[in-house]
Length: 223
Image 1 (cartoon, helix red, strand yellow):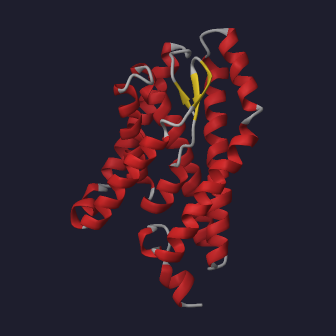
Image 2 (tube, rainbow, N blue to C red):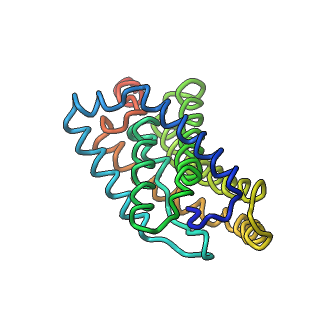
Image 3 (cartoon, helix red, strand yellow):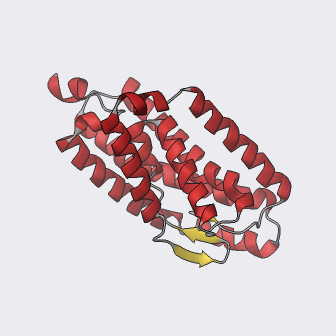
């Protein structure tokens, strides 16, 4: 989901921009480009994934003038490339949406926060839980991270968008529409979870080494 028109108070858009800039700056401080430079295969996979997600973002439903609904794939990018590279992908895709005229430039920080920072943070927390607390089992990783984690990330992104509207909507009608949209979140979660889980299943079977958050020796070789 993406907010396409400036229906938020200016101070809130500025605050979201500062938060997004800080988080993306933190991701850049991890110097994720070093891995891309050193590993050409990873570089090609990351670029291809970013372009594919950008194309999928074009398949969107225009619920109201200011809100568009689409699959995010943030959870999938986070699991496959880890959070720093996933955030760079989502930021680049949001910039492209602005350049294409799909989204107002003033909402860049808001959309990076909603479609990138929040779901990537939730996905990372779920992965940490699986990595540190749950049994070393392939199906546990797949279902908790791939299916449940992506559904939870979608829910968190939707609630973040609704929360921002409740906090600083510029008109009452936009707030009412946002609250109506919240009722449809349970319908969006299964689709994101199914596609993310399905693609993760394929990757874990045929190319487990491509998934940066997955240790194939720990989950497969030792079983």
